[in-house]
Structure formats: C-alpha cells, structure tokens
Length: 206
Image 1 (cartoon, rainbow, N blue to C red):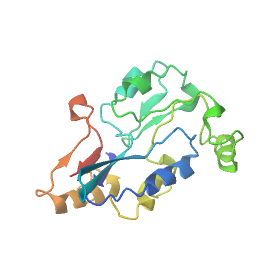
Image 2 (image 1 turned 60 degrees about the vertical axis):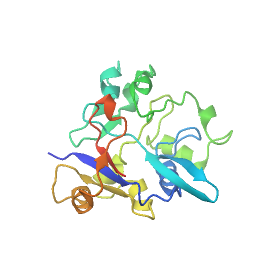
Image 3 (image 1 turned 90 degrees about the vertical axis):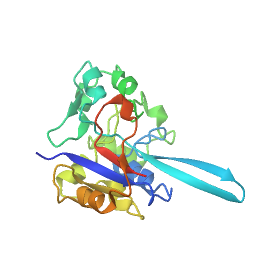
Image 4 (image 1 turned 30 degrees about the horizontal axis):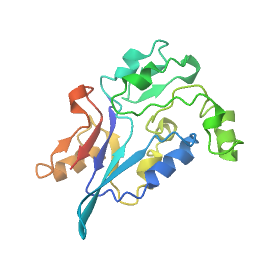
C-alpha cells in the first residue's frame, strides 16, 4: 500500500522560507497560521558563527495522537498515509491541538486572525471554494489536492535547494527511498520527537 511521506535534508536547507510562503499561498491560511515553519538558530561566536535551519510540518504519523484525541472524528488517517481534517465534522474542541507533539495543528477561531481587517481576494477564494474554513482545525495535508492531481506538495515544488523529497515510503524505487539509499550510511536519518513514539512519516537527514 502507498505510504506518502517526506525526507528533509537539513544540509540543503538555506532558510529562505520559500516553503512557508508557498504553503500560505496554496492554503490561504490566516496570518497566525504557519503550516510549514522554518526554525532557525545561530551558534558560535563572532566571527565564527553558523546558522542552523529546521523545517517543521505535520509528520503524518503512523500512530497519530490527534486522530485518537479528536472527539468528533474530524481527524482522519487516509489509506495513503496522509492525516487530514474533515472540516465539517470539527467541533472546535481543540483536543487535536493539545495532542500533537509537533505543534502542527492550529485552530483560528475567527476571521480576526486573518492578515488584514478585511479578507484578501485569496482568502475569500479559499473560503468560497471550501479549500479553507473558519472555526475548523487546520494542518498540513501534504497538499492532498495537488497530490491527487499528480503534483508534488507546494513546499516541495517551491524549495530552491531541493531539501524536501516527497513520495511513497513503501516503494523502494520512490524518490525518498532512492535519496536515503544514496545518503546512507554516512548520514543517519532521524525523526523529531522520537520519544513520542508516533512513527512519523517525515524523515530528517542531519
């Protein structure tokens, strides 16, 4: 069976935030909602300093705690491995927000959280076409609409450094698995918050 996932090569990430902007344009999310964040940290002492970038998104876990926590069964795990939200079922309990160990789920309660006092054309389009709904949990769904049409997620397609590799993790000939094969064993893959035991489908390379 298909198990969609992503490999993120931290050596390639340049912290340009193109993924963040591509995600916001694709999903039309409120100002406070960042489904594809990039954390950064500078270390060392001047002039010998370096900067580390860490892209964060929903990990589309094999054992997603958000699905177990949702009282209205709005959070689902699809057969292809994507964890998504059925907006019409969301009751606003926000249990999924608390359950997610990656801080990847948001719940904007009103239109006041949007960028401007009035909706932009993009926000209005997203709402009118049912792509994004107010008073519903929001999270990355690997751009399921794009994937269904044979395209890659917006963050993957936009990344200028090619640090995000998307595909079927159960297919040994998929892009992610071929990439991992070429990088191992010198670069050991790892997962964020491995202690949470959620079995993430987002794999990082140091």
